[in-house]
Length: 264
Image 1 (spheres, helix red, strand yellow):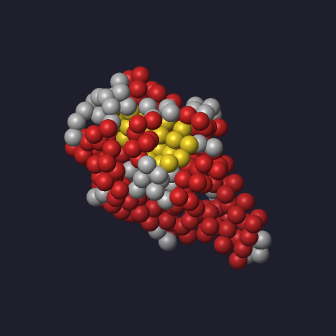
Image 2 (tube, one colour):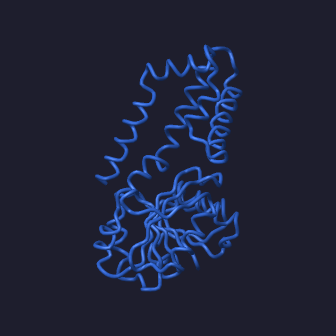
Image 3 (cartoon, rainbow, N blue to C red):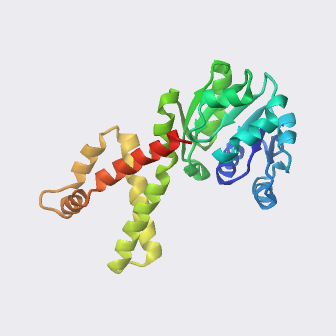
């Protein structure tokens, strides 16, 4: 096996889907471990990978190991596998708050680790992942890890001091965006639009707006101004959002997210 996952939940499944779709690895080159039988059976059914209930089987089989369990289980999983990790194996982590220093202390020896923070849009190939290697990872190994991560979206190498900010900016932010889309759709339904159509209009507006930011290179404020005609409908909506503290609410939510990530 070339790639192993310890934990086969939603994020792991999203990563597997992109990796297989883009032919980075074949299904038969991937193994996933999960104590929860329905979880591992789901990814086996969806992607045709090997599955097991043994974390040690993954460690003994795979060249690259993704620790895709929840943060609270990291220490127990590391305690289980640390003595069997070889100097050649590469560990990819996806847990917020678990620093390279913390991870190194838990493994208790020199282990190649790339700390990452992906997000759920990986499920549709539009993920955004930050990556940060420890001192034992070579440039070639980091490039290899980034090749894996880029199979389900975009990836950028960042300094570790930014990783908690990444959690709030891309890791958790899909939830904020989904809430925004839902709120817009609810308002449209209140004004008579069928719900399915309301979700489509709202989601496509968000998708198109994000694409404009990425592809035009223009400042979001400039793009906002392009929509706001004098005495028009949009500027009135913007006025109400400002009055109700829209920017401040987003700002404070993201600060709170960072604070929790730092405490994990």
